[in-house]
Amino acid sequence: MERRLSKKDLMELYGVYRVTIEDWRRNRGLKMIEVSPHSKYITERDLLEWENSLRRDSTVNRLINQSISK
Image (tube, rainbow, N blue to C red; front, side, top):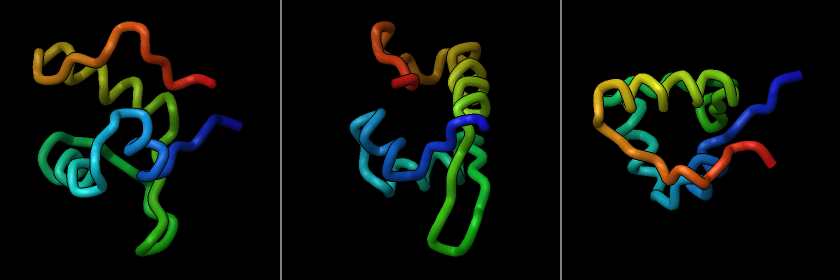
């Protein structure tokens, strides 16, 4: 089964607040799967696709040495 990342996981991964994750969802195309009104996640594969789409647009640069996989 593919790894799922919650909003909390994304906050820790990128070092941002929840409001930033919500901004990315509303304005930057981050698509999270809603399990319930208070529970959302994104698969690791979908997150990498989203990151790559931003790189192509030169909008966001992620630290090269940082990895999602643990």
